[in-house]
Length: 111
Length: 113
Image (cartoon, each protein chain N blue to C red):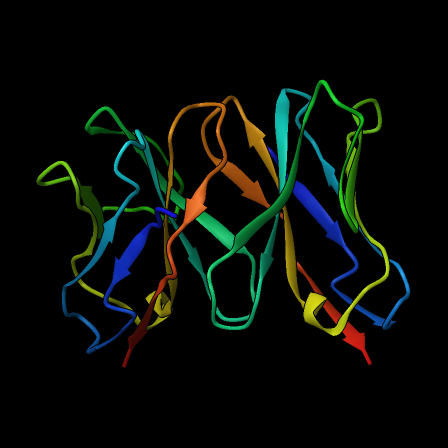
């Protein structure tokens, strides 16, 4: 099966700085890579996703890059704000069925 | 905006008791999932369900677990004889199609005492 590794486990940045979270996956057949934001006690919410036929996708302050050869993908948040503080999970989707989640990154944006 | 809804939000049960966690997926969705998240840990896949049958299950999903879609709208997870280590947040998710994003419910926090 798929194995998704996520780093770092915690990330603390100053408001206005950029944050980068990285994930690697093991199965080259994975073809869909969503990122979820989970605020304390709440459900995971999709914030951005990328498919394997695309190398980069951007939505305002959030961008995701995918390197299929190296089997890694990254989440980039620019101009971070305190409300970006949450746990972020990457996931890899294999064969249109289940998602494999990374272990999560707790992002703390200090005002 | 349509949402996946789960009930109850929190359930406390005694070890050995049966629990049923309920989910109402988004109405036109065809793929259904249960995930769990032990406090502070990653979200773990339990089971996927399509066309009224289990399409895949993880090693966590042993004989103590079962899923059902009893009436075309609800999607339930039953744990027959709960153990302390079953304490976790359980998330239901649904997808419209094979290429679409998954929407998660707000979760049921199960506490086994």
